[in-house]
Structure formats: structure tokens, C-alpha cells
Length: 273
Ligand code: SAM
Image (cartoon, rainbow, N blue to C red; front, side):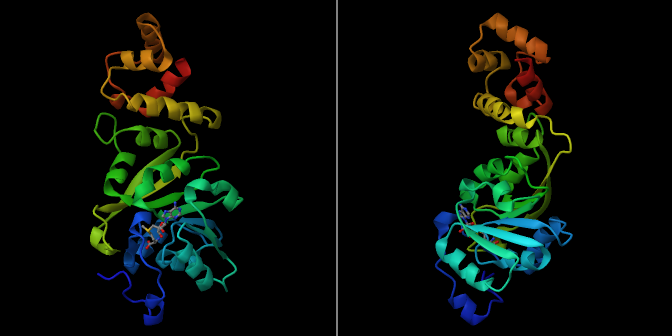
């Protein structure tokens, strides 16, 4: 399938060269694009932030449905092209920036929802970046299938890790539908899926605890094959007895590995410290 199918000839000719190093795999299947936009459940007045609008296939749909649309594109040539395309639309702003360098909350300056067919070379950093408050009311991402599996993984499996636990501490993740590699031009080497992330009304951790929690979880999964007794000794510079006391206080068996602990148990460990 050609990524430019359906585009007028003059617009096709005007596309800047594809930069694979920026994860540029363009989606042109209108049915899939429509389903991604539907997953945002827009009422019409929302501020929508789009990550990586690319050639604007999803942007075109969002511009019709959003109250205000801010699209963040790193590729200067694409950003310029989009700016020209939406010059007459007062509700669309094209921000030429590295999404990881901007505060999404500041850019939105109020409540917002987030969407993106994200560049796969930085999917996980983007997901972590978007967890920083003030968070989106909803976020819909097109990601590699493996990342989707990690987001919804259960304790004990090999996909369960720091990403799963950090997201689960503040939000609910769900996989909505699969997208085959052939739907993109050029096709990526991996299969993809659309996921939605919705913040919990009552997060497991407070804003003040979030940083400490993230460091704990990431450090623990850095030792995922070690027993928890060894993990806490190493993380908190404790002797064996202190480690056992801490784990007992948190209700965690010292012989289990980090990969079987639930998000709630990680929270318990952090608070028992
Ligand atoms: N949304 C378009 C679509 O569905 O066809 C394009 C998706 S493409 C997978 C990812 C887009 O993210 C590209 O346009 C790429 O230039 C852009 N991008 C790459 N790195 C970026 C970054 N650090 N910040 C913002 N956009 C980035």
C-alpha cells in the first residue's frame, strides 16, 4: 500500500524526503486513522496535543474534531509544510520541537488529551515523559506491539517491567486494536497496536512520591533476576537484617524477584522505607 495513496498529485510531490532516522512511517489508511481519532472520544471542545504529525494524515481528522489542536513535529521540513497547510485554521498550531524537550502541560495551558503515532525509536521515553503531571485526561498512542504488551502485562511475565509498573501507578492502560506493518509507508519492521492510557481518579502514588517511585522501580527491574532481599540491600545500602526488617514491614517475601511484585507492593516497599 502506498503511503501517499489518495493524496493529490501536487501534494504528493511536495512531501519532504522521508527521514527513517526520525522513525518516519506514515499511516494513510483512513479507516485506521479514524479509529485512532475515535479512541480519543472527543466531544468537540478539547485541546488535543498530537505527537509527530508527520504528513498530517491524523492531523487532518483531529483538526476537524478538536476545539484546539497543537501538533509537535521535530522535522523542520514537515513542520513548515504543515504550518502552511493549516495557516488558515485558527484552531491549529504546529510546534516545531523535540517532544521530549517540551512540557506538554505548559504547551496545552489547561486540560488536554494526547495522541500520537509516535516515532518508535523513542516510544518508551515519550510514554514516561507524558506521565509527568499535569497529565493528559486521556492518551491514545500507536506503538510497537511489544510496547503495548508491556503496558498491559501482569506480574510474573517477561513483558512486565518498569514501564508497566510506572504507568499502572497512575493510570489504566488498555490495548484497543492491532495495526499491521503493511498499513504504513514505508512499513516498519514490527507490528503495531493502538493503546489508550487513562489516569486513575486516585493514583497509587502522590505527585510528591512519583520521582522516588520511578527511581525505585527502575532500579529494582535493573536487577530483575535477583531476589528482593538482595535488591533492597543493594538499593538502600542495608545489611541482611535491616533488609529483612524492611521487607517484613512491606509484607514482601525476601526470596521473590522484582518481576512478581504488583504495583501496590512496590508502593508498599517505598512507603515502608
Ligand atoms: N502521525 C504521522 C502518521 O501517522 O502518518 C507520522 C507518524 S511517524 C511514525 C512519527 C513522526 O514523529 C514523524 O513525523 C517524525 O518526524 C516525528 N518525530 C520524530 N522524532 C520526534 C521528536 N523527538 N519530537 C517530535 N516529533 C518527532
